[in-house]
Length: 463
Image 1 (tube, rainbow, N blue to C red):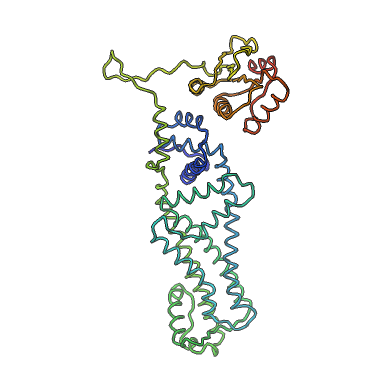
Image 2: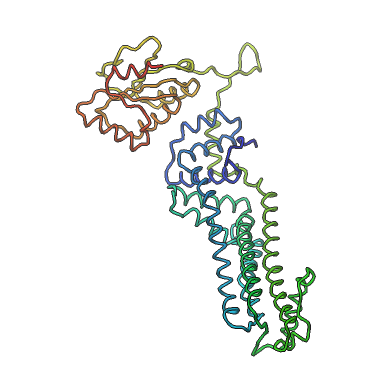
């Protein structure tokens, strides 16, 4: 499958998410995609590329790319907020152990600083074993996405659909545990950096007596616990209390107290910081290896329907009877004119209307249409092949515009360098005002609105 060339921000994830977001939006009602279909058909050689291009063009109209850029701008602030939240939670738990007391239960401090981290890490590891539709690991990553999408700062109307689309795409590609897990591990890594800095500062500037206490457990349990947890940090250079200190912590001297402190710092650094850093690197490697699965799902019913629509747009091939076996494309209908043409188009005008409304020069082509689907399709196809330099659409101001008019104006003017609307036949000023208001509400305010034939002729024939 070939894909559209990369553009700034047009990453595989962004493309896949926008395709899915457009599908979700179209579940609420089909979008007007005639112009996007023709443009995608003309610029991409293969079906998959055309589906991606159509979604990208519709996404630009819906503001999805703008929303994606907003996420990237706010993402850093959201991650920092979550980092501070995690670090603050861990420190608040440890504060209950350190606090203003001079005696610290080191095992309680160990559990306070690493307990929540261990539980969330086990949940993430469990998610790797679950079917991809049930995997729910990386809660912090999911929260980061949802929080970024729901922040009210310049939020677009389809932010929620884009967030859901991103989650759906990652789940389908079996990348959700790695993507959300990677974000979660990055947050925890930064949180442990802050926590270790605060812990080291507190132990450096204040004198604490580190010990352990118990009512139910035996001293032997704590000896084995400290030796087991301190073995790996000891291999990396951290000190570990000796057996005498472990059995009689209350009688330990200054050197033994420093060993207790280094054991606690080493455990937090190794089992907290290093573990999360390694998991973040693992997620990054898994993401790079698996991001090819973000490619378009060609068996998706919605994608197959679009592929069928694109196939229907292919030119019909006929066999030349004089040269058996030779194939040639059916000749297209005559073009409106070469690129640079000026076209005066009468759209759904009453039979009694004066046509044309002024005497155009020879450089202006004049056409009148009753608005049938066949006429519209033929004209749009010709404009797609040879865009007009200036297009002036004459409409009956006394008639009420409808969705068909909006669709035609949007598509025809999108295929012209400049587009204007001549409102004639108004019975009162309210008719023209109604059309201006309708154009504004239909997001067609960029069209030049003219009411006098002389001004319309001057605009159409201007250089």
